[in-house]
Length: 274
Ligand SMILES: [Zn+2]
Image (cartoon, rainbow, N blue to C red; front, top):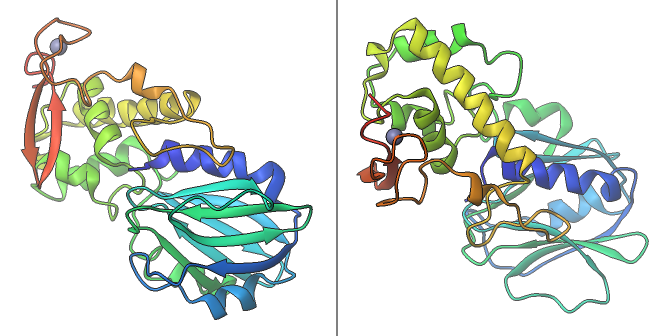
């Protein structure tokens, strides 16, 4: 599932060819994503509008248009936003297609259809059901060690569940949550309100670090993820614990363990994480 670093790389690879470019038309498969796609609304917002900016908030992509509308996209489990020449045959599971001037398409491909593609008025965007419930983006200035410590102290959940909650921190998913807990040396079942200020500082630093490394490595590609140019990332080769059950810890050589928390696998080192 694409997380913050993957979505950031999609945004970065979209910008050079998308910003300033006019959308000529929109097509859709008619199949619903997480919710139905409102093709008429997409067309009205996009047709003959220019893309004025591409932003990321948490795991959401925001394509702002000269029509004062915004296309909000979430890649769900398996979504891709990729450029393709308009002459190229459509891959299976292409659920939306933005025809751009210059013979290029931006295509939304999503086999599992858990993604989101919606249109908002620019002025209404922050109040949208998607964005209004998000916590702070961990790469923004508002994500400080103090913010994290207060949020941790204010609840007594297992740390893993807290990190995945987009209402606290927007952008972490299973991979980067596991990696951050390892780097901070904190066990995934620790209760958040039991973490000291020093551990919160460690965790804050670790979250930033794993995300920045993920971005620098152009994302983690186990199966579906590619950027808008169709390129896979290499961060899967740099992971400390995620997906490494039974393999030796890169620090202490203990075997990496896996537990299931909230129906998702958590990978951790029983010796390095306390
Ligand atoms: Zn270890």
